[in-house]
Length: 122
Image: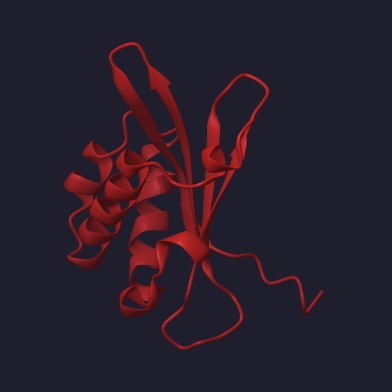
């Protein structure tokens, strides 16, 4: 496996930018349409969207350092982004996607868009 595979592809980068643009302007229908796969639970994802879009500091998102890519044994690319919160608190918003190149093009599915769990108080 080459290191280059661990960077965002142009298609993944574009999709993330479009997802964040949809969240920035509160366009749930567009956000949902940008996921190639169905959400496991639409109601839960809508709650994640509604909460997280208000927390993310869109002016401070730098895709390469804030997103990491892991390759699963079955060839899927797990993409996890840790997005800065507006109030600069330690908790961040996590955007998780799954990506794979299929015969008819890239398949990029949104899995989560939620605030990071704060376990420091436990």
